[in-house]
Amino acid sequence: MQKDIKSIAIDFIKTLQNRSSAEELLQFYHPDIEQIEFPNALTKNTGIRNLSDMTAAAERGKKVLLKEEYDIIKSYIFENTVALEVIWTGILAIPFGNIPAGGQMKAYFAQFYEFKDGKIIKIRNYDCFEPFN
Image (cartoon, rainbow, N blue to C red; front, side, top):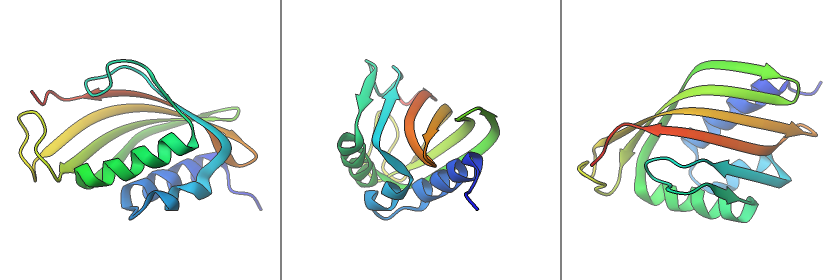
């Protein structure tokens, strides 16, 4: 029996949180995946990433963060899409803004995961970071 898309999205978040490499995420991605990150405190312009871009960004993220946690507050399903409301907490490996290495960043995410053939084909991120400057 195929897993439902909500379970896949939750498994993806758990893997994202506990990954040791970007390769662990590949099992969740459709080959044609696209991620859209809308402007926020870290990304001034809308960013659109393909699979290669996402893999590189995940590797960069592991160098900046000692640890990250995703606390799923709410989840919704509509047709082929799972929407998650998440509180993200990251422990920094390097200083950022006024936060020292070892300090904590926090953000409130709305994430939309669209599925095709049991894989994530599109991710849309709306990220609201607490002040860090």
